[in-house]
Length: 296
Image (cartoon, rainbow, N blue to C red; front, side, top):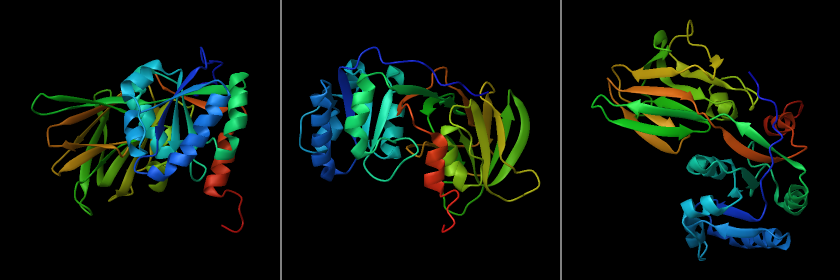
């Protein structure tokens, strides 16, 4: 099922909360230039404490910034935006990505576009896309429960390079496959252009509500094909015999021991991404993946 683009708009556009690409103090002049552009349009700018320390300025606690801001801004690449979406999920604030490098799948406002984008934002010429997110938890054999939220994917692999894992997968409590190989990816449509794509999984339109289940270097080709299932299904995974880890968006890692079960479901609320009205996903695919480029 694909969600149609919503007509949702920001309640007000007075305050923006910023985070910056981590470990990049050289981004300070760029941030100051963009901050001045926001303020020239009457939008106050707040900077998260961690980002502020990195460039020698004062900031505010991330949670306070999320609570006070009308919308949030990541200045960096897709990884910076990914982190911001996950960390701010509980506040459900719309997020816009300003790309400080190459064109991203998520952070699609270029540095040259900032001023024009702000003008369109203030005149209502933008859209807010609702992207599916994963909400899950790991039920430890000890009885402990570890909850997590993911925007791109959950990946089960071995903690040791070149070691295989065996992952048993069930839907609604019914076993449907056992995957033996280098790992298993459970991706959202947004994450379908990340590790899933590298592993040979399909690209899925980002407003679709579905899970993409893709094995990584499967040891058997007979029954180890990518699978797309509706987002209202719940998926249970457990690692058998081998040590394994679960990586959440490549930013959080949990150990999976035999007897632990990882549960995955679609989150009740998605991520809200602000885009230019004319933003076209297929144009981004064409540029990023060089579709139709005879010289590639």
